[in-house]
Image (tube, rainbow, N blue to C red; front, side, top):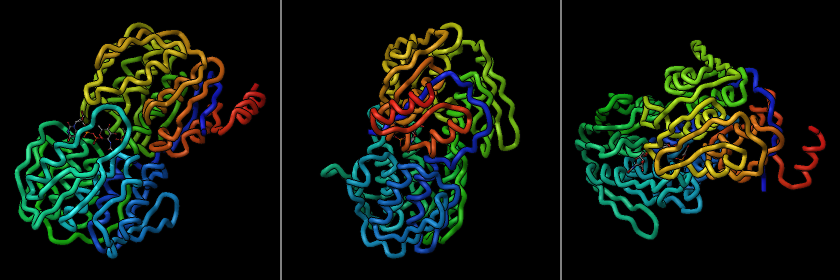
Length: 430
Ligand SMILES: CC(=O)N[C@H]1[C@@H](OP(=O)(O)OP(=O)(O)OC[C@H]2O[C@@H](n3ccc(=O)[nH]c3=O)[C@H](O)[C@@H]2O)O[C@H](CO)[C@@H](O)[C@@H]1O
Ligand SMILES: C=C(OP(=O)(O)O)C(=O)O
């Protein structure tokens, strides 16, 4: 089983180029099957979730070509099925986007209930409420969502909870419904805006993405396009936190600083130096960093996908911090693993009380999910001695070339798949 092994202690220093946003790309790839014409998507992150989604698109009958690692050309003219196979989809969350895309284009979809990280109960009731409001019959049978409509008709839909997935999914279906759909209390995340911009580049008529209300005037056809995905807010934030955790000096390149404001503000509150440029941000960690409190919230609030990485930074800061997780009820599973490294964190329901310690010591830990896995790697890079992180498949769902990028910043880290290789690494680095 593959693991990361690392020897901590090197401050990470240098520049790192951020890849395309996984969570935008997943929505965009699913939406690309809504036209019969060629769609070319650039700045695609080469991560396992994306490759799983592309496999599912191929399986539906679409042609998928990869001129290079970060570009894909999709042609869905020959799609012969509206049923997505379970084996492709259980692993990933974004399989749910096939419901909106297939329903919009073919008025019919059969898609297994989504997988993804086990960070909470993750219902999809708001997605289904939206599809029903657009005139679709929706049922759940044999572990799949089955949706059929004779015609999709526009509707006025109010989301009871702010949901990224429901916003994007309903927006996709409504793109090809008759009339103007008004979607209220929607998510405003950068990837919601990116999917809306992508659909508009295919001829959709979507206004208001990035605000609380999205208006979608349905169109009959979508056409081909070439589109470049925005940079990954969470990958960028992870490397920004790496500078704080290792007391390093990292410039994240190819980013949109506006998307990173909540993360920058919190790092500054801890005492890090944060300098913004047009498409770059430099974060300089300081020997003494301060405690602070933060709460995860929908955008523009602090992202839940950055909660573990920022908590690791606080676990090595002076004083007591309070972290409140308001989006997913089970996103502190990594705390037990972090405690093996010497962190002093007490979890009470949705709140973690973090008493900063002066150092971590290396340990063998298990990644419980994607972002927590990345956070444990950051902790290992700051710890004294060796750390082994197991279950790195989670990390590979969302970080392209993670260990290579970390190594280019001076980290002593390797991917190994046996005890023998781990021993070799230890002998080599001493
Ligand atoms: C593939 C993808 O883009 N995943 C992201 C997406 O997940 P995902 O789309 O699953 O997250 P949502 O924004 O939908 O979830 C937000 C909250 O709403 C609740 N909820 C959601 C839908 C629903 O029908 N009913 C309901 O009650 C959820 O349980 C959660 O408490 O947004 C999350 C919140 O930013 C991120 O952590 C995930 O990385
Ligand atoms: C939780 C995440 O992904 P997913 O929703 O796909 O599980 C994430 O990207 O942090």
